[in-house]
Image (tube, rainbow, N blue to C red; front, side, top):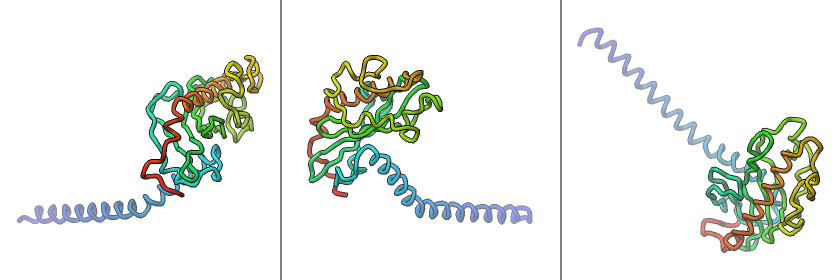
Length: 214
């Protein structure tokens, strides 16, 4: 073997060793940090869900109750979305739905909606939007309490024709000059209630085997 060949071989061997060591370190770091990241993501998701669903209303592992829902016009979704079922003593008490108001002023408004098993809204939160800051963004709970007016509402309270903003003859307040955004949210929440009513029997069914108490 020539000197050049030996040098090339040594250089290749060193590079291979560095690659092996680097791969091993990445794998080790991933294995150590992935559980921490997963727990953090789950905690964040549960904290968000608990904004529309009091923790006292369930004793099951809520995250384990997640179901994937296909796109549905009533939910305003064009991609699969998620559902969580709250249970206490094995009985369904509420659901949390992901929904979308697709006709906001600046596009989609992502929502998280808690509905009790009797069909009443527990809470609603906007999880993503592109509405104009200082004008239509008051739908965000961090900006105002506007979104709280849905709590306790159902398909019969108010009656169907009153599921509109006040400017259109409905029940729900909206700020002057910024009604497109709340119109979209009101419509989306009512549609989610329609979806719940259509599937209530399935939501109230006994839990899947993978679910357990928290």
